[in-house]
Amino acid sequence: MQILTIRELKSRLLDGQAVESMLHVQVGNVAPKTTKDGKPYFEVHFIDHCEKIILRAWSDAPVYTLCVSLEGGHCVELNGEFNHHPAFGLDAKRWHFRALNVTERATLMAGPKEVRERQDADFQFIAETVQSLVDPRLRILCETFLVEHGARFRRTAAARKNHHARRGGLVEHTSQMMRSACALAGVYQNLNRDLLIAGVLFHDTGKLWENHVAEDAFHIEHCERGELLGHINMGIEIVNSLWKQLKADDDFQSWKALTPSSESVRLHLLHLIASHHGEMSFGSPVVPKTPEAFALHYIDNLDAKMEMVSNGYATAQQVATNIYDKSWPLSYLIEPLKPFPPDADPSSGWMASGEA
Image (cartoon, rainbow, N blue to C red; front, side, top):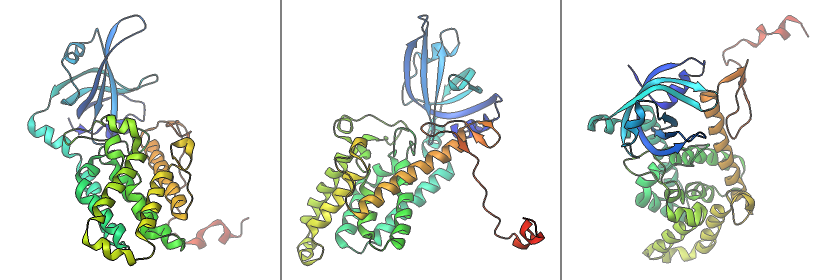
């Protein structure tokens, strides 16, 4: 039987039919619970490189006793008859599992080939874009971050749910935002391209702790530092810490003659991090007050929404012709309009026939 990813499994369930499938996944959490009638069961979270599912092991099922010794971090082969339950979402009947061997575990942790290649290309794009920065202070600051925190950055999730909520999701989110930032900087000439790109790189760097993923895991960990401070405050802390390192460099003395001043550059970059949520009610301590701050906020919001929409089309069931079921936090999605074929002959249209 072919080994599927969780996303591939969800796609096969869209027609409402049950599917016999095999998955290689990691256990994220095993929670003992009880029904309203007091019957015990386990709620088990399974994760792979891109998605997560929750299955329930009822006390009268053979798999229930196996779950007693199951722990977060275990890597298993999951087999069963999967279906879409109206109340629970993705569900499975007669599911069971076995532990993966060393080779299988290594293959699982490496992720699907297309995901590895995409994230490698995204990180390379980020590094190359950073090298294109003209302001030496911002360029070296960004390069230093990638050298010191690059490995952790490449594992981190951009969120815990809704968008890019997966291992490596922050690199995907950041690279796509950088592509948008480069495009917008060519359209709006009042934007400081170097500052905007640096803001894109650093805006979510606090999530390296808030949404940390360990080297041998897919599960997004909880971190006391992240919970107490939040990623915006930690992002500001990271920039200030790296900036102190720059001040100890010999080149920093020569930068005193540069315009704008180094202190202005630092403050404007910190403002981008502080204001990127757009509103104080959404967690930003200040609202955007510069062109780059407004641009960063909307670029961030746009990329998150596009990811949510893409996930909605990939996993939501159709409830009517061209209409997809609600995919939190979005409403119903409509089948997108296909682009006009670039090689089509416009003269063959209805206007050419004289109809109106």
